[in-house]
Length: 138
Image 1 (cartoon, rainbow, N blue to C red):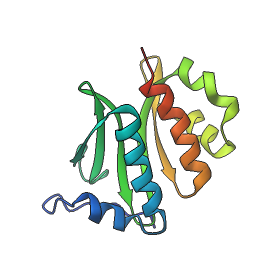
Image 2: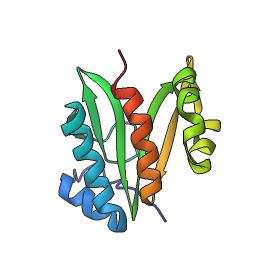
Image 3: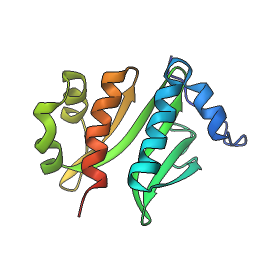
Image 4: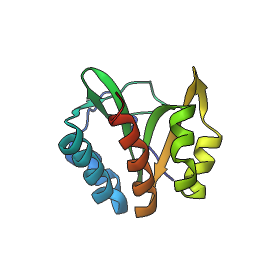
């Protein structure tokens, strides 16, 4: 369940990645479009961190990574880093599911990374709240 696209030799198209997300394909498409149109991010299909992560879409703004979105079988995951202060600023406005990811984040500097799996509309709404903070950083 939630297998990723792990064949490094077969670079997928964005359409193939979208289709792979199955019942969450439209959410995958919607999030990529939202980042590109609302924040002018540049999308690039990447195999960034080895076989554990697989193929994903990197979103960058002015050469700074906003997030990676990894296609999964019937889902997708967003990898994002925020500071502790940024997580705290929105924590109470997020679902328990999202709070659990933040509570278990991988520490890095004054914040940390989360690998957030989207399987429903509520998850999509929460990741957009987190991405909004990241994209509007000064």
